[in-house]
Image (cartoon, rainbow, N blue to C red; front, top):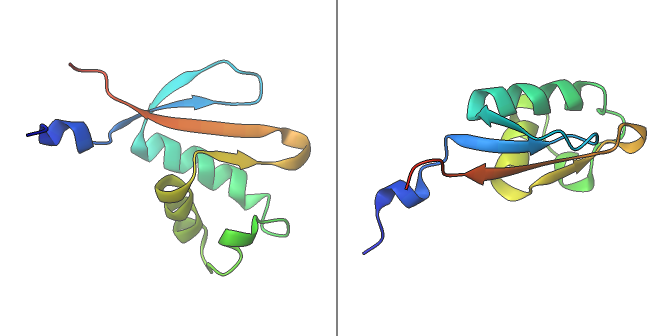
Length: 85
């Protein structure tokens, strides 16, 4: 039986366009995505266009995808990582 720890998502690695990876907590990832989405409201990906608030958009991104194309600001990627065995 798998450990419940396998499904615990508290740390992410974020790869900004400059490819300098950063380890962040979920609240930090939410802040990064929020800041990116603030400037993209007129150019949202199709699956985010029906969500009215930025926090809803952030949660959709975290739960369904692992990258965000920010046009001329490049593509940001994030992945869940487990730091403990």
